[in-house]
Length: 449
Ligand code: CMP
Image 1 (cartoon, helix red, strand yellow):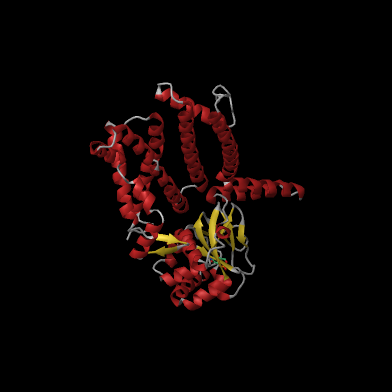
Image 2 (tube, helix red, strand yellow; image 1 turned 90 degrees about the horizontal axis):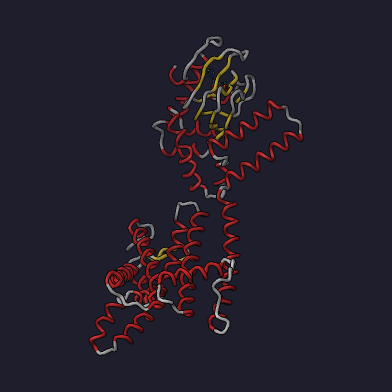
């Protein structure tokens, strides 16, 4: 059985999309211009029939889904397909040109055979409805920008509709002999009418009821399509960059607030820098709030993916069990500090342990003047207060823009209780650090001291 997420199935669907589009364009054209299928058109028609036929066969082996439930059973799939799309799909797969070529010698008058052939070929257009299903699936599964995809699909349908409307117009007004110019004129009439531009240089013959009615119908259709299109384009443009719009709104709000509360200019600029850094480093997304609705297991997988970077950077995490990683990673929370910000100060009560993902953090000596150590990517700090239940032994200050992750005390305690191996590593670090003379100036990564 072929599953919906099969790569080859996607490629085949793309191929079918192309084939159906070709049929949907060519069938009405031939009906209007009444040319005979010769040369490459004949080849294309037979090829199209072959493709559609293969598709009918494949449908019998394609897993269907109904309300999220997969229907894998062969006979059930067959039964459903026979009841739904089989007949139109099969009719669309008949090689009409070939059949009527052969039917000629069988005694059917050639002209009649051709006429019937052209009409019957209309069933191929039915495949478009089937195609709508494929497009919906693409829309659901695609990782492309949803707004852009929606816009493309909308454009596809509108161009298709414009083509049919133009062919209809051609059928009514008749052609003058130059097929290309005739078609372009019809398309021009159709677009000016649908777009409600209505130049009025091509108009229905006032003595011809069919032309008048057709024009009015297209006008009514046009207003609907036009309104729908404009509405859609407006929302799509507004949604194209939701993140940036959100960031700008936030900045405006914050700036207005700071001005209202007379925040000192230096502090204002630090706040602005913070938001700008958030924007540059993660497009302003508050990662945890985006995925807050997900069920826990899915959330854990996403967070593991997001936090993979830090897990790989921190040496004491390396070689840990999957279980440990899963437990720890969902509890790691990202925080950002701008240059000069204190993460905490000496003597404060400590509730968090920090891991450095990006940037440098300085551990300061007693008087906050001398730098005891500079910690970088993959280092951690703030573990001593949690381990030994004591106030912070030193201050920590961001030396540049820093992306940190923290664990809070309750998680820290739980993880240490459950994973003695990890506890051993952390304790070893803490003891080594606390045994160092307080006034000694140590530079470099804690992990390599
Ligand atoms: P804590 O006491 O909670 O807060 C200050 C932190 O600085 C401390 O935990 C350690 O994580 C860290 N720290 C203290 N001394 C050193 C050192 N010599 N080298 C690196 N980090 C240190």
